[in-house]
Image (cartoon, rainbow, N blue to C red; front, side, top):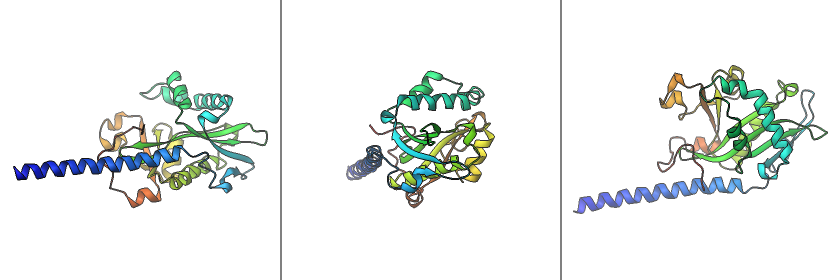
Length: 239
C-alpha cells in the first residue's frame, strides 16, 4: 500500500501546486482590474501628436464611460466590421456584440480630438487564457479620417505597455483571415504570432475556421514561456 499512498500524495501535491499557481494568475488579473487608470504610469502616451493629428488618449473602464461614447464605439464597430462578420461562420449578432462591449469587465482606450470627439478606440480586458494572465484586445477601430496615420499601431503599443506594467504574459487578439489588411498589420507591422490556441495550431478546425488567434508575449511571458499551468482553462476569467 505504500506505493499507492505515495502516488496519491504526489497527485494531491500537484493539484495543490496547480491551484496555487492559478490563484496567483487570478490575483494578477484582479489587481489589474482594480486599477483606476492603467495608463497613468505612461503620461507621454496620453497624447498623439503626429501625422497631422493632435489627439488625447484616455483609458477607462466601461462603467465610468459616458454611454454616448460606448454607443459611438458600437456604431463604429458595426460600420467597420459587420460585413466581415457576415462573411465568417460567426455571422453578425448585434445583441451579443453590444453586450460584449458593455460588459463590466471591458476597458477602453479612447482617442479624442480637441473638441472631445472620439475618433478611435480599443476595447480590451485583463483575463485568463489557458492558465495564463493576458490582456485580450477585443477591438481596435478607427474612423476613416484618422487611418494610415500610425494611430492604430500607437494604440496597440499602449496595450503592450499596459500588459507589461500589469505583469500579463501576452497581448492576444482574434483577427479574420479575410480581413487581409488587419491580418498583415498585426503579423508584419506589429510582429504578432499565431497563438498556440488558434484553430490552425490546435487542430480543432484548421482551414475551415475564418479566423486566427494572434498573440505577442510580454517580457513576463517570455520569461515563463513553456511553463503554463495545467490547472488553467481556455477562454475563462477569474471570479
